[in-house]
Length: 423
Image 1 (cartoon, rainbow, N blue to C red):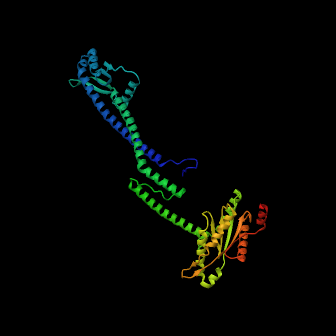
Image 2 (image 1 turned 135 degrees about the horizontal axis):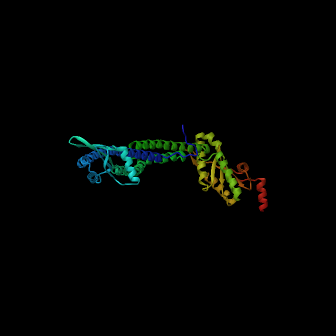
Image 3 (image 1 turned 30 degrees about the vertical axis):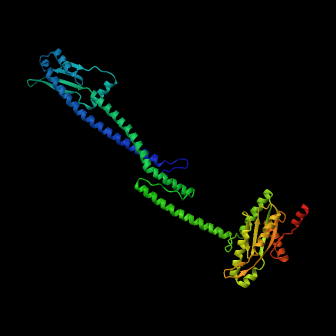
């Protein structure tokens, strides 16, 4: 089996159909032209032979008296009178003894004359022999060779007609192949383009346009239906993936980002802050009496408290700030960028103040809670995520020991050194 290598391009459907259509058209026209020409030549051959026989009889009647009286002059004159007016190449009159009495020969030379003689020898009877009779007795004979001018002209006109018809057929075939391209190849190309877009670009929103041919239109409709299913399935997969990604990175109770998401964002933010010499702050939040809420009102009430705390904390932050639930009743807030250290303390005070409003549970109970907040600054209190989290966590426990419901800034050797350098 002959295959196409990587370096050889496969022919397009349009090129294949065009070549096949043109070949069939030219072959059909050529065969028809050759057949008509052969039939015409055969018909003309019969006509020419019949005409030569009539000319021979006419000469026979004309030269009969000259042959009887052996009058060469009269025979030549009568022979020339008839032969010159007809398609005769050579005419001879013999007496009864076989002696040449008169002869007329057409004086022509050149390629055309040679072609005529060649055609005469191929198609016509050569020569036509007819006896000269007088009172039922043969007194001589006539030999007649016809001229091929009519046959040559017919063959040339037939060849010209074949060439003309071939040219017209080629033009018609090209025109019809273009029409065929529009009717057949066009819809197939549209379908191929949509298929390529779906395979390479995952573009399932494109559709195959309607086609005039019923089979191609049905094929396009089936392909569009398949694309509808693929698009629906892709949307479903995207929705499922987004849902799974959200579940993997967010807390199912409060809807806040979880610890893994927060630590990833913190790492990226620290790298960016170090690159651009920016500052940021990390708040570590812990509920002061969450265990008592669970013990007194149950875990369902504790969940309501956590949801309410998450909502209130998120409401106090700026647009680019991030709050996450680290686990249990612990939350963390990333403040970036931080233009002034006092901004972090101000936001922490707003968060603490928002907790003073009692929380009304679904069953009507009213709970008052508070948050202890630890604050760590970058780069004063650490350069890595773990250093900042540990510093903020230590500051939160310090705030819980000192006075619950307040914020406490981290006190680390690094921050003390920064304070000393600033002073």
